[in-house]
Image (cartoon, rainbow, N blue to C red; front, side, top):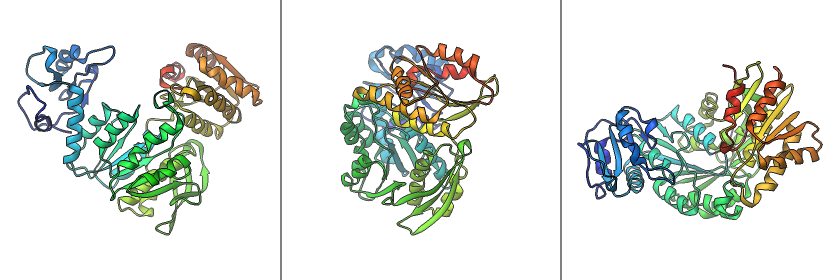
Length: 454
């Protein structure tokens, strides 16, 4: 993490006032004063509803060592880096720091799966090299600069998630990250309200491989035609991963062990090697996650036997968390977010569970013109994967209707999450497995907390 002296140098030409520079690194960079910790840097940003300058005193009272603020704020006192625009200054600092560090940067984008690939890739690399990764899902115009500023001079690798909401933002992110390796997980109907169409999504996501240097590596999902053809847009070497025969890094003979993970053979066509690997990451979709991480491992100089040993120690991370209900039932908590592809992946995991499989699914947001057909497709898919389906939210009526049309006899709809929680409290049985998944705005994590064992 950078120090105040580093920040002073990084903001050369932008600073109006600065505190006394010291070499002690900031503990973290925060934009919410409630998250401020001793030694942190607080960045006062102006949003649609709040102005961060109102909370500078709160951040300093929580022992932030400094704050990045606007000269228009009227604030005075020690510990203030004063600039015209804190966001522009933060982005400039991140971009300049990236230019100074020696770490090779892995940039990850795609419609879904970015976080799990980021976690798996960083965990694999960290077993062999000093490695930094984006904190949480810091992947946009605010979070990505913070992620870059967290790279240490001693790091050999940095794994950065890239999640734009527009082409303009993507251009900013890829020019700041200057990735050496770029992973594209897939292109699907996510954020279409912002992107427009799937063609627009493909064009925007493809800016990552397009930005790679000739010495770089584009790690592309070879099973997704929209991603595969991005190889024509990059100067870098392309490596296709997937299940198809034309993939450079391919998985065969897959065995799914539910929450105990997956096992499969990895064929490295370029190296002419094959290796059996086993990972505790749950769900068949984690085969693709493991392949993407393995591709980066190969580019870092590891061989397949080293990679096989490393993936045995991967942690499932922040998604698809297994919890226990108050009555002993199993809960698959994937309430953080949802899109059509990730809904199907979670349902695949539920399908392999026994004895009674219960799905609580909620609305998916930002799907644009694909909203209605995407919810219907999830409903048809859910009909094959669960014994009891509950859908919550206005958009999710289509999930239930489609499931019923597909022959599912135990599908019901409720308007609010609280109603779903009450139904489950009355009817969930101790041997059930319950999947809970929806877009974050549905706040189904509240249902998880209502049902989870204390």
